Amino acid sequence: MALALNLSVVERNDSKLVTFTDTSTGWGTEGDPSYTNIESKTDISPTYALVLNITINTSTETIEFDEIDLYDLAGPFATIADLVFEIDHSNLLISGNTLYTSIDLLPDGIWDISYKVQFYNVGTWEDVDEKVFSVLIYGDIKTQVYNRLRLVPNHYSTKILNSRDIQEPLLYYTFLQSIEKSAFVARREELLEMLETLERLLLNGSNYPW
Image 1 (cartoon, rainbow, N blue to C red):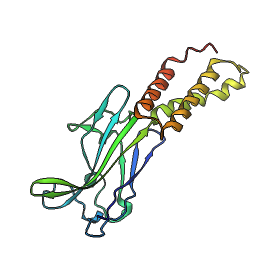
Image 2 (cartoon, one colour):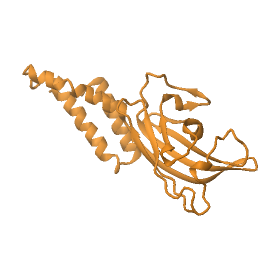
Image 3 (cartoon, helix red, strand yellow):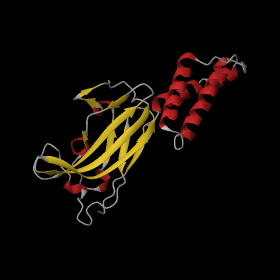
């Protein structure tokens, strides 16, 4: 098999959209399907499908969402440039129903991703190839930290150099940097605990007597 599925992931600054871009190699070579062969899973004739499964893990829960038929989301795929999949609140469904509204930010946590090509064969969808990976999504908490940081210059201009309003945002930013630097080496549980701690700090503040 020449096909090796892969995806890049970019989280938009407003934390309302995550874009998955196909970076696979081997489409349409050595007998493997081309992206031009992909059709909707509603077509039950012998055909290929491209699907995305997302499970979001937080410190308190794990949510497994409905499978996303990527042809229905972004097809047809005439060129490799068409294999770009924008996921927002409306795509995260459970039993066909969304948990979120259009004004909600996408949930922070570790997103487990399964990207598959499937083939319909005698009444069953069989996996042809699959890419499984995890990615840390943390746009909501990052936005909260940077919103606090934006206010720091105003506090400096008032000469209140030891104010909690200055020290606390700097603490949050340091914690955020620690999460970012740990993303590739820390265990899942550690990352989720760090996210939860920062969320708690942003909500309640620290106990440090600045």
